[in-house]
Image 1 (cartoon, rainbow, N blue to C red):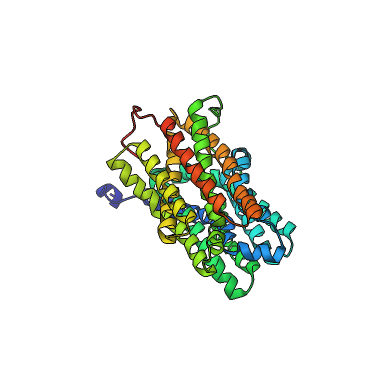
Image 2 (cartoon, helix red, strand yellow):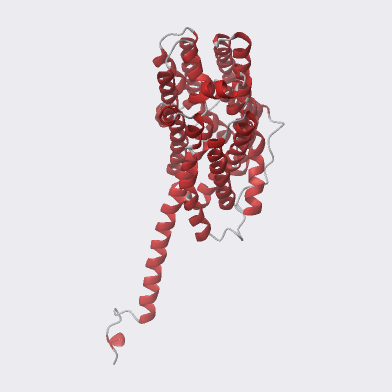
Length: 418
């Protein structure tokens, strides 16, 4: 009698093969999971530096190219406008070509347009690179959420946190190192083009994703049955609120260094303050999560975070206490963005409806938000100072406080989880 018959525990050749195959599948899945995490992180890093790297060298750009404050503000507003106008279209691109393929090409577009800035010596070429980067950012941003749901659904909360952290980290890198790079290389063009390295690093991960996934024959699983809630009053309140908070955020992000320089601060310290504004937003979302678990009222934290932002702007208006001003503005803006993304999802009754509410909120909101830096630049051109622009941001914050009383009524039942 054979050994297999005498001892049933001895695996046959086919059993051994199946065991080896299962082990290989587990190894492949684990490797694929880490590849997806790395691809997500490196892609997310590219969503902000093309915008945040402008502000620290904006004064040099204005002097070298002779552009006005309004024109300079467009360097920040154009990518935001693209996010408002093109985000809904990215879903269609993903359905036709596959999310992964569109993300890969978006990274190529962002990296190529950013690298092209090294040869910028005219206003027209600088704006062209800004538009191209804005198109890449607007197309890629919404699809990363679909990528998380498709490839990393088992760890969605953790991956969403990783996405937010990479977003804030990219913003902080662009705002903190652009000025030092300009000093080192004696060129704002080199300082701006340096950030193409983030896209160059990310592209190989996405090429690997394309090789591992049969995306040629796949369509993105993006729900398309729910319509945008154009006739819903609360959806419009949330959209306008998101637009107002984006208006203040991008105005600060685009003009903070020049505001401080205009008040007598040094270029180096002004750039550092922008870095602080970006960095403090990284832990603000986590802090909000802990606060909501203890005190789940959305209304309270909307009012608190907006008040922090308004107080910080008041310090900035009075040209005093720059550190507390920037810290308060950073924490306030970070918490407001987290709440602005949370409320539309909670207002929806299904995943499909949540997608439609978030799409409307962000599309309308970014279109409103893009006006902020332009208006501040227009006021600066007209008056030669930023006091009226800062006062306008304070008034916008007060308007947000009024809207928040209607967005989350006092008697409305609120969820205890975040």
